[in-house]
Length: 300
Image (tube, rainbow, N blue to C red; front, side, top):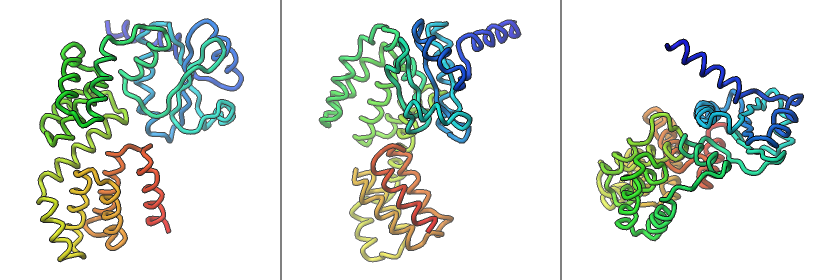
């Protein structure tokens, strides 16, 4: 039985998923998109997020059983195709319909997000909970976490793995320092979901839990004023700045520690900076700016 299932799966993969080249791009992408939706995945072997996205993208395409064709472009082999399509970062997925690119995304999305992206392009009905999720997001942005949590919970009663609701309710609990409750929802994300959203949530939760186990902000601040060369106090205070939402101060204090004692505790300051990057997200302006500073320090 398993052999039959595997054979069927292999045939489906061959039918709906293929590699693209300059010689086949017109046929497989432009012409094919006049008949069906075509997704073009621009990737590279060295790109970690590309490799994370690949199985999720393929799974989502196979599940719609022929309604979508996936064409994969290795940008190391065919950089000219990436240039022609104005690809700025990897991974990037472009959607083609009627011979033209009509939509796309960059970065590694989770499975549910990919399915939503495909469903939108196929004209599938939008989730009936979109309005409720919009209300929840708005409440969270206004720091009305009680209302936000209530709205997210109503969605999750009907759609337990709604990624937007899981992320929103987890962030709402994090904002109210309810770390145990936040962890419950973070752990509910599908195991195969390695998207940026999940990574940032897990990293943020870990940092806030660690900060919660330390002495309070005011106590650490007084201690640091009395012991400005104590690296442990400095890094702990930086964590408390992060927990208070003062991200720039947290980064600055940790960078000062890295500049003063780069090898202390096996590079503890550098490790903490990288954790901040994970929590902020790789595309956050602060991460991009701070990463340049880190590179300058490490390689100058």
